[in-house]
Structure formats: C-alpha cells, structure tokens
Image (tube, rainbow, N blue to C red; front, side, top):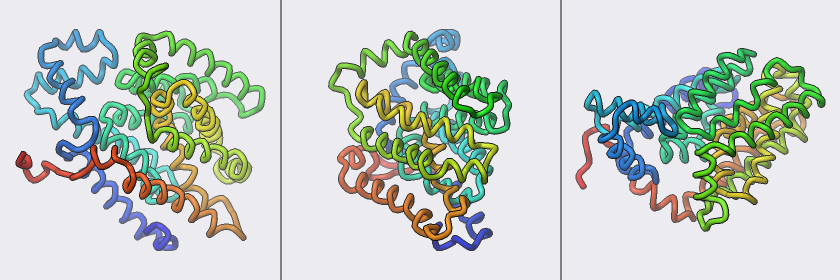
Length: 339
C-alpha cells in the first residue's frame, strides 16, 4: 500500500492515522491472545495480595506499582494491556511524526516490533514506548529528558537501562575518538548492568540452559543486516540529508550489529535487547526514499518491504509459536467472548 501511495502525501497521512488507530485497538482489546496473556494474568493475581510499598521495593517497580493501582481502584486485568498498548503506541507515534513518511515508519514497525511487543509482551512494549520518547530527546540534545525517559523505562523493564550508556554521546561530536570513548563507556555500563539482581536472574534462566528464543536468531540476524546496510551504504548520504539524527542512528546501528553477537551467550537476552533497537530499524528503512538514490531509487525503496514481508509471511506460515499464541484472534471490544 505504501508503494502505491508513494506520490500521494495526503492519502499517506490519512492511512497513517487509520492504521495507527486500528493497531492500537487491535492490540489493546485483544482477549486471551499473545503468549504473555497467562503470565501477566498471574502477575496481576500475585499483586492482589501485596501492598503498594511492596511493589516499589522489588524489580521493575513502576510496572508493579501500576498493577497495584489497578487493584486499588478496582480495574480488571484487561486494563493492564490497554495501558501498555497506550504507552507503546503513544511513544511510537511521537517518533513517527518526526519522520518524512510516518506511514512507512509504522509499516516497517509492524511485522516484528508491533506483532511481538504490544501483542505479546506488555511490560517490554510499555518500556519501548518510553524509549521512543528518549530517542526523540537524544535527537533534540536534551540529556536530562533523555535520562529521565530511560530511567522510567528501566523501572518498567530493567533491560532498557542499557540505553543509559548512550547519554554521554548526546553532547559529543561524532568522531572516531568520541565513538571509541562511548563504546568503552557502553562496555562499562553493560558490565555494571550485568551485576544487578535482574541480570543474575536472567543469567540463571537463560545462560547455559535449554531456554531459547527460536525466532530470535533470525530476528537478530535481520537487525544486524539492517545495521550493516546503514553503515556501508546509507551513512554518508544520511549525514548530509538528516544530520540531526545521524548520531543516534549510527550508534543504534552499531548496537544492532553488536547485539547479534549476544546470541552466542543467550538468544533470549539478545532478543530482549534487540527489540529496543527496532524503532531505529524502522526509521532507517522509512528514510531510504529520501536519501537521493537515483539509478537504484525504486530498488532501494522496495527492497526493505520485500525483506520484511518475506520474513513476516514465513513466520506466520511456518511458526508453531505464531499459531499457538496468535490464533484465533479474539477481542473484548464488543464484550467478553464466550469461553
């Protein structure tokens, strides 16, 4: 559809809002859809017997505080999903409206990010929405705002704390020396993050065990390929056409490539971190038509749609995980479905 509307900006604008509204409703009002449904229902029931102070003293305190407040004011479990979806799509929209083509951005976000996060991972979806606000703050060179959004996101999903290591780069010039310093700081930050209680739990669950993210290797490979495409073919043109966000897109592209190596440690940990980088991947793909390619303009524009389209149809057609978690789709927007 995006290709068909290539020269119709007004129609793309209308299509963007219709798509955004549909996806929010599709996600927020799902009923017993997604692999997260029973797990978060268990969390909802566990918090029923805990106080708000208990919620604030454990891991991911803002998430548990939100659940506690839902109990306090008498809201049902389904509202956890509504709040999570609202945070995710609000953040995604905030980032999308900065793009030359928000409709293309939302299309590229759909096959992996949207299908796997707000539709199957409430807590991380909410954190990713906040990271989208943080990315915007980075582009605007607002360090305090950036750090605040990352801290809030990390209080919902602790793996978001990895973005704190990028904060010093906000006011640094993008030079080889500064990038090296940022990378070393990132290594130090990652080491400190791995000393936390959340990291110990993640290592106990996922490192050296049989727990795997079966689709994670393919998703992370695609993400690494996106980072390589940017660094090898797009970076020079990007720096000329979009200098304001060249730094954050370059840094996240390097992270895309680096995260692929985490598969050797744990496919699950690599997969969890890689989802936070998918908004940057969507930005990269959506900007390609604006980078001044001449002879290969059509090919370069269409190629990302073909790659993600093939990935999506292969996943939905071949994955038992997809059939288990997503079908049949049911919604409670018109009332709670019959058992």
